[in-house]
Length: 208
Image 1: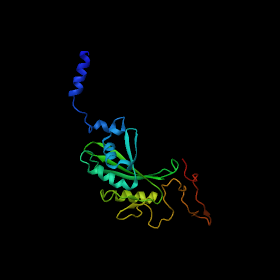
Image 2: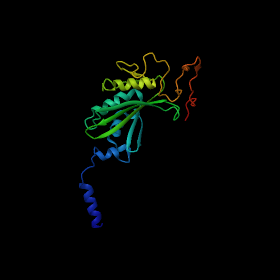
Image 3: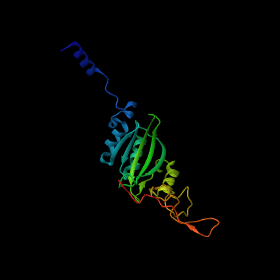
Image 4: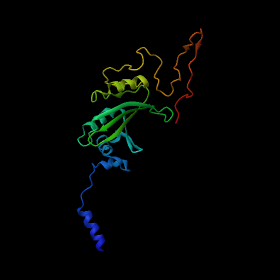
């Protein structure tokens, strides 16, 4: 055995254990070393549907019924401390997959660790998702906007009604990808007596 090998073994035996909470792990090439991913998998098991790393940003996909529970777990976790909710929105995945159609998205921030995390829950049209208002009151208007634009229902929201469009708006949800360019109804052409049909979308349905 060479002296070099002996020195390496000595260093390995007496070196400090790896810090699993080190900030570098939040950005490690192996996304499973991300502390939030590791703790979420340990706490929620198969409820974690997928984990995606894209351009150094991490997204955890969770089953809808565990959406609020996971967010609250990350918020109250002593080491993770994702205490700040910066946004709630949705994405219509109409042309990208068959089901679920929508992703409800919560953007979290840990002030202590200076990192961001995205939580997504996939829902179909008419399928509700738990509201985050009980744990972050600031989610109120964000969820109302998502309801107004996408038609996604948030369970336990204290006042889920339109916030951008008129209360009597009856032309659907404008940020859905199958929404016609100018709405569903005909509209009057001013200074004339004719009605102009709306411009229909080119998209005829979901695809993969």
